[in-house]
Amino acid sequence: MSKVLIVAGDAQGAASIEAAIAQSHPLTEVNICGVSQLNSGAIAPGGAIICPLTLDLPPDLVFPGQDVFRFCRNVSAARDRVAETLQVPVGEGSFWLPVVYTAKGPLYAEAIGAAPDKLSGELSYRQPLHLSDVWRQQLYELAFGLLNLLNAPPATYLMQFGFLGERIFFDRLWPFPAAPAIASVGVQVPDLFVCHWYCLTNTPIYDLQIISSSGVDL
Image 1: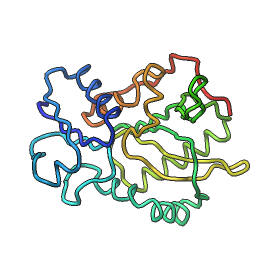
Image 2: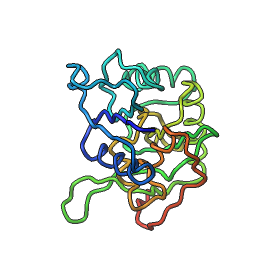
Image 3: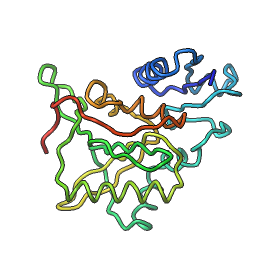
Image 4: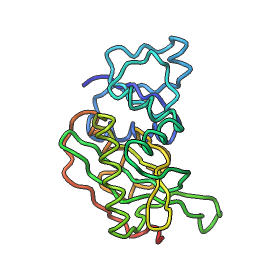
């Protein structure tokens, strides 16, 4: 592979993907652009692997998974479809299950939660979120059913969710390593940005390991 076009939603995510590419394919030419540059025609994506890190994409941009991105962008319609088809409650949640959806099937990473930073008090993302086996099973079943329903291509997905008594509920799906994925850097090997790049390039991923004990107790 020689060219990759990262359509950036934020600088941190783009830099993390760029670092993942440099680690495994150092000779690859990486271009990072914003949606406005695509809309204006300043960037021509032809011949490059397209790596969107935003849902705000031009409707004429063609890439694998574009139908999944449309589903994810319309949150209200996505919730309705999950409620009707998968019989799962929906609502607004603040937890994330990363699913590394390889060509051979899903690898479920440890969940991500949000907690106040001890020094600044600002909200920060933490992995792993320690969940019971009952909740894990519900999450895995929902994520697998949803990605299967969407005929989703290989990628790293974040399924946003919340808790309702003994059940989980669905919030929305991110079809790329969105902001909470930063919690995996230095904590999970390979981290979620590396996993996403591996999925896009059909590079095998055999296991996900947590190498740091810091996390969130629910």
